[in-house]
Length: 456
Ligand code: UDX
Image (cartoon, rainbow, N blue to C red):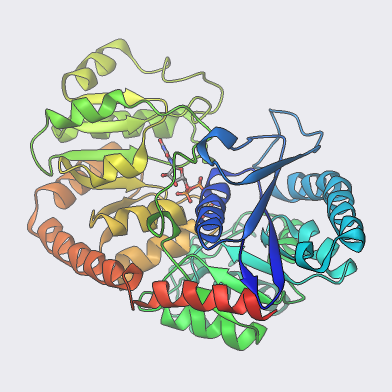
């Protein structure tokens, strides 16, 4: 139990039921527990973490009344329902703890701090109502913040979305002058109706600053984004990434990992395999996935492809692919439903990661020094893709068309350009390792965060 003078601490954490949010929160919870804090991990009923994988943490399932088929894609409505439904139970739990403290002896009294992700905004509001400090863990890139923060202003000035003569939305290559090197086409909500965009931004951007932020990134990688955030919020911002490397934890995965792919990777030549995964949320249509399949088959490189059930709209798995194509693919590749991604990226056979550029996938790839093929969809992914290809220069942007895919795979895995990307990826990997080691920026930042909690 962390104590400061005579005080004891209970940290109540909660993250939204999305893989890319829950995993970093569980890593943070494990770290804070190792520092002696008592931890309660509140979570929605949908996509529960497995308590058996996290001994020492107390789990609090919140009655969310969400169905297993909840539409994550309809972000605004889903988030509102999630927050409305989780709030009463969460509040009731905190009130119970506070009431129980009234009878507790001085040595048993606990100070409570709430830590939540930006999507579980009800937790910050409950904390404010009860007079408790709250801290937000942000699981997306720091560079994404200025890009989303500027959208209301661009909408007001009529600069976004960029429209053609018939009001069609243009994939505009022009750079947003305030956001170099981000182009208009890299901004989120490009094709979302304006009202819905504003509503969603209002929900996820955090208008009233919490006591502090934790950001799953590192100082050397995103100095401009972090400066923007600090100037904007004027509260402490601790950059503590990559959280998955700070402390070992058991699996944080909602899905069962197919570990058979590791023995398959063992049989492949070093740096020969392209690993393909579009994360836990993205959906593609049949046409795009068929192009992806042809691109992989024609590249003549071995590949490991995660086809998550539900990834392809309207289909169970990949049953729509023509039989001769599947046979051709099986000669070189392996398709699984869910992979132990961190282990895969750490495998010496993997030479490239074809990704949707979710922030966790990006950090995991960076930590292993693996160059990327970038196929972003929404939210922060297009901004991450732009940074990967244009700033950090460890990725190439791809369009899901078989010829382009084939070229891009060769470029990254066997070409001179790929070799240069690999060198830069290794340089970044070295810097990340320094950041998380004793005396490094993320390590120091986490230690400073612990002191910060103790000072509250
Ligand atoms: C979402 C958003 O899409 C992303 O843009 C945002 O940055 C975070 O929230 P998601 O789409 O799930 O996340 O992508 P990502 O952030 O990359 O997280 C996916 C996680 O699932 C990674 O930690 C990855 O290791 C894991 N994963 C993915 C597996 O363990 N196995 C798989 O087969 C695929």
